[in-house]
Length: 321
Image 1 (cartoon, one colour):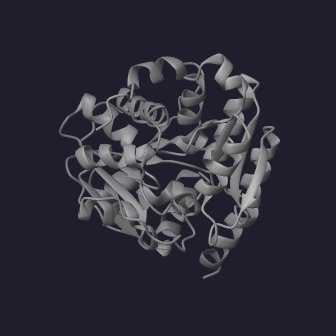
Image 2 (cartoon, helix red, strand yellow; image 1 turned 30 degrees about the vertical axis):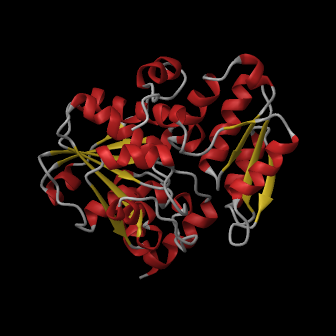
Image 3 (cartoon, helix red, strand yellow; image 1 turned 135 degrees about the vertical axis):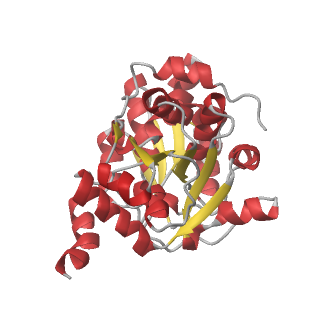
């Protein structure tokens, strides 16, 4: 496992910068599941997702002269917005490689923070290749979405806050894309409770992490066809895979319909608007995909970046029946 993932320095950098998002509770949810469910409302974080933590920490870790030359990243949306905002805070330029089918709302938000966007076709081009071409021409620093020690360390502060506010948890359930959030969360959780069970949740069509852990090697899949656009990754990273191998107990998958059940539940009973990727962890427990070990369970609601039009499009068929 990488040894350079510095959780303590990340905590120092993000204190007073990242929003300390609330923990939501529900008597109805507790009674339905027979456990205490603690929902970490990270969709209320700056830029609408946990990604701000990792992006800010990674940019803050750079030497001043390196940072001044500019930042480069690639992302379908949430990390793009996070890097753009963090770069804006540091008053340095940011360039973001985004798929041409990224949600319009996420692209517009990224541009609103001052970033320059370069588009590509996710089905015929690799974003890493597009980024390499830019790096060959310009002296920028790449901050990838998940496979970076300082990004992982920044994401760890989300789970650290959850444990501080809720107390020790028996189990922590986290949505998984490339593995940055679950890696940081697992490291933070196991500092407090080494026996805490860590469960990741992926869309059924995007189970690259599940396959990788089962086979003991990084497995790459095709771009998954799922409504959870924040989880359309094709493989875990080197750093995240190493952490997950040691600290993650299980990866489960959920269907798009089950994800929408969770989005609907959060809107109806918690009055929260959450994007599909953000609701993936809750979807797993509502669909009984996870055996709830112990009485106290944490779930990270990881993002809320969804336009009113897309939210209505997804929910309207359910509300009309």
